[in-house]
Length: 498
Ligand SMILES: [Zn+2]
Image 1: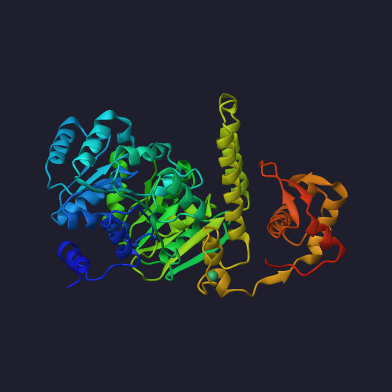
Image 2 (image 1 turned 180 degrees about the vertical axis):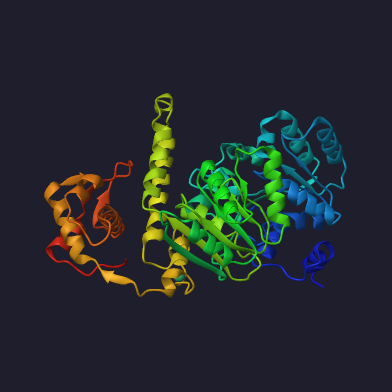
């Protein structure tokens, strides 16, 4: 029998590899560096666990989340595999135990929080183990955290750049669920991967049904309807802790036993929410984006966002928690045109604060601009008229056909031509040279529905279509682009979903 399959059967009881797993495992076994981008639920952990078992050595795993590491250690123990996890939350006795088991050659997986590498103890330990040729590989999980272009940058991850010199000769394997080309390049550069084997799986998930719609002023009915119409577990994302608390309360008031999760809760409340989400048949959890990395529940039937997500990449990761069992699942965004402006200002306000203004480095500035850009792209996907999956995947550099499942693919009936209104708007802008959106809209006539909303929406469509330029400083200063001037000379149809 194929030796890899036979180890897979012995240790896990499975008969097949998922797409991509085998080639990454083979690369690690032949002591090559590797970068694996496998979708959520694609079985990333097997890529570094199996080599440890096959070679009977130690694999060190760097992971950003304690809960995630502890969960994996529990699963490994249940399979009779020796594993420990070292993080700052361990008390002295547990730490001593863990360090003791490190002396044994039977240990297969050692999970480390990145900040452990700040201290000399662990650096010396790693370097000694590498010298003794006891380390099969070092795995860097959630490797996109190393890149400032990623959606989840963690400064601690920058430390990992010296793993190479700390443990020369040990293969490094970087793993992530979503990493755009720029982020992949950052991972390879910053981790100093050498001639890495690269596997990038498609992020397409053929069982997810995306829909994105305007959030009504009173959104409770809409949310309740989505929850009651879905199967399995429900995960609801809100932007702020306050919103999480408010929504949990509102849902409980209408008889939905929702639980809340955010970073402001104490650890026992967070653990309780996590256990509830993992252990009850149809839980409803309201959470900030602090929740979810590495949370493994297969039957999530609905992931609902109550605001516009900050980046397409982050959204793909969060929505990807739906339907890991392969059965149909829904991903819904309820957004409002004000979301982008609010989020954008929040980002700016943070960097522009008096006590920070002088501290903002050019890199931070660049990152801020990139964040604004991502936000604008996310808004364009939500308000735009293109296939949701196609445009989401395009934003991480993957080109696919329209999905045929999302709200846009299913209902293309609501399109109409907006060139007449665009002409009014562009003319007004043309006569003023350059103008803030607020001042522009003041000069425009009333349209059938709410004036500010519709004009604002049309401005964004025209920015997206390249007829108008918009400043990226949050002030939303507008001016005509060349194609806008061409449009004024000779208009063409502009079909947008109303
Ligand atoms: Zn579609």
